[in-house]
Length: 112
Length: 114
Image (tube, rainbow over all chains, first blue to last red; front, side, top):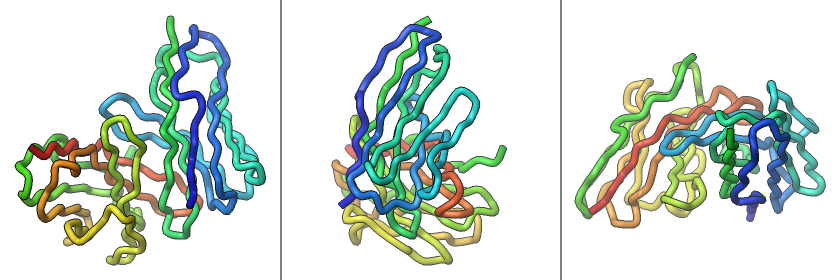
């Protein structure tokens, strides 16, 4: 059974720092991995999708990597801003229905 | 930008009552999902729906739950007889391609069962 774990659970950094969020999954047979952002009381916004054949994806200040063999992904946020404060969720798609299995998230606070 | 729309944003109901949560997925999407998130817990998969039928459901999605796409635009989740433990945020999601494209989520319906 696929399990997704995210470390750390919470992170507080000063504005401008580069930071790394970690995600690990137990079954390497995945179709894709997505990183989501969730603001309090709101829905989830997909930030990046990495297909199983890819190693990384970039969007602006965000870069996500995928190492399927070791069951790991990282989300790198460059030059963090207070507006980046949110919970970041990692999710993997293991079956052909598109079902996602989520980690518990990392809550990020960027202080001005 | 197109978005997934969910109504209502909040629903309060008495235990044992039926509730229907409504969603309008993005118009050219083909795959539809319901997820839920109990306060402080992980987002959990409930059900996936494609070509007018359920393609996968979780253990949570028992006989008390059902989904429908009644008119080609709406996608509903019905809970027949609500329990206290059904209290959660329920998210609808859709995508055009379940493998290669991002999943788009609605802003959720907060269901409170008293």
